Length: 315
Image (cartoon, rainbow, N blue to C red; front, side, top):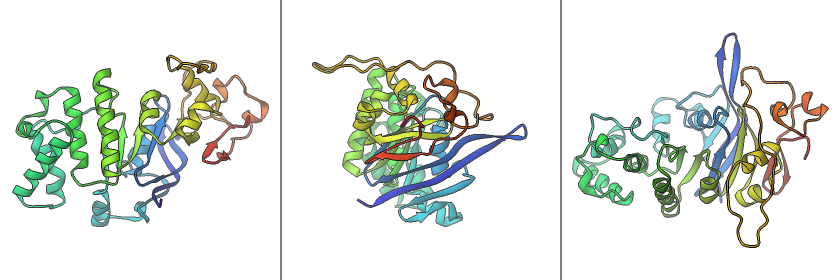
């Protein structure tokens, strides 16, 4: 399949006290139409900044973002606005992402008004259909966001993201603030929408079990850089980077019948400051396998088997 999104050497640095916080540092990956990339890593690793930089909600400093064959970093004004119709986002906090002064219907209709799509009657029918798709029902169209639970509010956010028939959606930890039972419902909805509309997701999450269910491939991010990326089963069954292994070790699970549960060392210490990155490997201060070369030379992000990329001197 043709690639829908190609990100090349993307960078986003923030100036801090005459230094730079390297929130996104030379990140590259690609996505096909209908494919989901799960993005995992600790808080502060740069996941949300990467997602928002791809959409240019945060302006990147360098790199290419080729969406549907066009480098959107070169677009301005109306050209960029039209291209953004097909790139949407689902935010982490559903209530904060909705306008409390607008009804549910108005929140979902807003993108259609901004892009001058349809008549008033056509837009209302489209909103009613979207409410049915996300499992809320058209009878809630005149309610307000504060009247809904967190899970219902997130369904409204998903409906709004779907309003312009996007090809690509950044799902920025869309279930992290919800109860576990509601998380399962929202993840199942996202999976069904992916299958039905062939949507590509960048799915950002801390929950490795959710990522495994929804994703086709998984990228592991640490201090602004992707340190490992592979098809999901390859990454979960054969993690190569010590950081990936430590993340997987932190997931409580019951082994299936006949399956031996792999044991990896737990991760120790806190994530260092991205303002003062050490020379060499950025994971060296927390890695129990650290070698002299790790303190001197940054490992290249390279393909070690088909589709499996890793940045580690051990591999």
